[in-house]
Length: 71
Image (cartoon, rainbow, N blue to C red; front, top):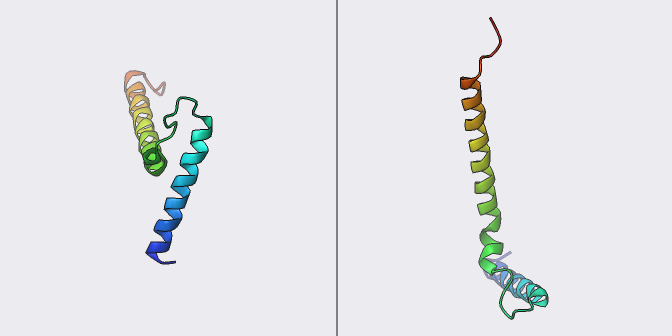
């Protein structure tokens, strides 16, 4: 598939999603920005990875604070 074809498909998808979202938007604005649709998955992935890093740090801190029970 040529790059131009992909651009056309993406543009059609973006117009479709904008129209679909506008059905649910009673204020006349946009519920979903096209930018969110394009960058959302990568932002979600980064946020999820950051959350797991924090979980790991919390577990490490708890292990350091509490005795392990082994003698």
